[in-house]
Figure: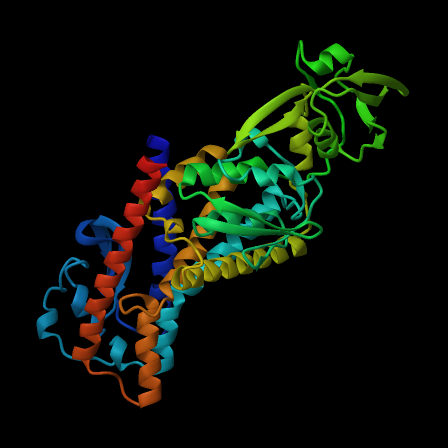
Length: 460
């Protein structure tokens, strides 16, 4: 619990600081007066003054703000910003006011927070690649299916042979395994079409609960091109009875050459209760054996799905080597940082568009509870995982901040765009009215996100 709380504070604190630092630095660059820089909202908890700016931590952990002099819309949410500055009601207009600056300067200040979020992601992804290497991304090729883990109604996937390429899910192109897991995680509950290159489409019911959806994603195994090297033999299993030993490399099964571990598993599953001739390499020589996979079954609706079980396994060390990050040079680390940032920008935009067009489940929207939960999980996994999560979340916050909702950066940019077209700004009363509407919309989104978090936490 303590780890989760500390990790959440670090994640949100750093990302809020980075975003607001962008606004602050840009405001100083174009000579806008900044009375207050705050992490958090509401009344001041602690702080200090340096020069013209008061730097504070505020009581409500709902974001942060850079209070700029002469920014008309600030009036709409002065309560959230700890009230007006002392003496501000008698303050005269100044050439250092936000509204007194040229349109381009104001647009730069408003955009700078989002730009800083993007730069943070680039730096974070680059640092991960430089320090820990680049993890391989499996192709969109099915390595196998854990039949016992499949949710009800999805057993058609158990009949898909290993090695099958997944081309699309509900019309969305799938390039690699990351695309596949994201498409399944964000799909609407209900019928989902998974198109395989050589088999055509398989339609399954997408579960509505996160627990069953995660079970489906976990049941599908990527093709990791693992060698058919036996590193675990369960005592008393059919493999043990057949004389298989740790270190055996399977080269032939049922008269078919074995290309890798997952191909071997597929052959085992296809022969429940049948004789299975095997040829293995052991200590530099070939040994012929015969095993009989134990028949097992799982209920598949009205049917029963039967498969063979041998009792062999691959060690975590072999899996670790297959998934081990690859070290790359300095130029490649920067390229990885940029490409990963762009990939997550595209992914986030796709999800936001999907939420609007209802092709993505609204349940995929997460709030502070989910952020806290993932922050804790990432922290326990190590600094690399925590930094990666922060980079992804930074991009999410940047894209969401660009939505054209008054009170968000995108709403401010919309006001500036209208001013550019009209040749004069909207009336302050109009901007204040729409800013209050924006506050209501953002509050409604937050309530929905928290409700979604609660459903995940208590409803599966």
